Image 1: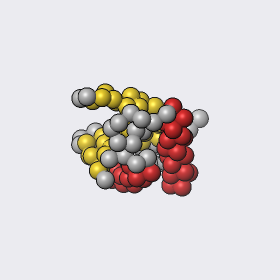
Image 2 (image 1 turned 90 degrees about the horizontal axis):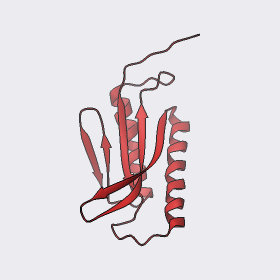
Image 3 (image 1 turned 135 degrees about the vertical axis):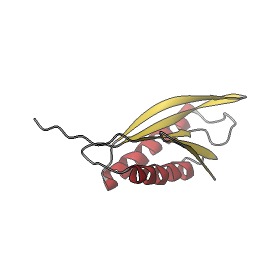
Length: 119
């Protein structure tokens, strides 16, 4: 048995699925966006050698709420990275999700700072 370790560092991307803030999309449109988001993440992982989690979540905010995704990146011992590399991957992936899911903004949470990307 081999044991591999690396320093812990994480990033979590939070992205809504609703275009704008008016709930007018059908369940099918939401499922299509969820599939698009998953495929974006899958393609990126395969391209760069990365490990992430992909979860459906729900956001509650003043005056409303919406379904969304939570994408978690870790420093995976099979593909070890530096904190700056993980931040770079989260930024690239976050920007792609922001644009392709037609969001106004999304958040990326690191252990020491939260970054908001806006269109």
